[in-house]
Image (cartoon, rainbow, N blue to C red; front, side, top):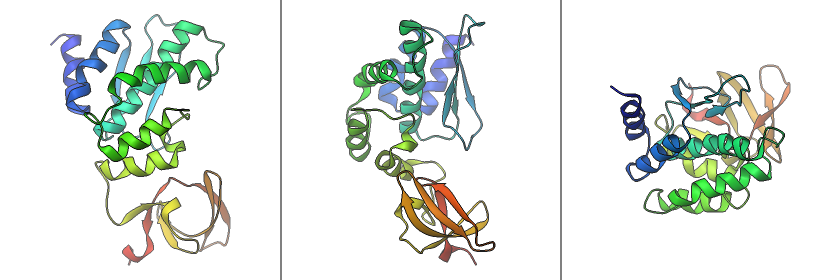
Length: 209
């Protein structure tokens, strides 16, 4: 099987059908190494420009929904295009990247590809793209139910009321006040306070026996 066939098959498996050809063409226009990786809690995808490599590398987690995969893919390709066009001194998520991301996302930003709730949140997000979809709480919230591992006994921390008890990584917390994109939470076993991402997925306490 040729490399092109491998890429095309991967796109067919992970992307909305209507976006497959466009994403394939992005790769053909400016090739890069592309790896679909195991799930990583700290990031959905990754691109790092290496001066010592002629062909750059993009990685994306395997377990993303087709819609999150598409957004992440275009996000990372925009990094490659921005660095190639404007040089390596630009900020990773600065104005040059934002403009490039908007330009690359425009051909697939439609209700023919995204469900209406994602389309509306994504359209708003693209006015001033953040460093990740997770940093946009509205977009993160509408994307979550489409995740492969979504479960009704889980919720985003931001959606829980103050004082609610929840579990994350097997530890029991109580939600306190929200500070921008993070929430002050108390670990009940120690009384210690922690700042946890507002879009962190947590387990509702009433589901744990």
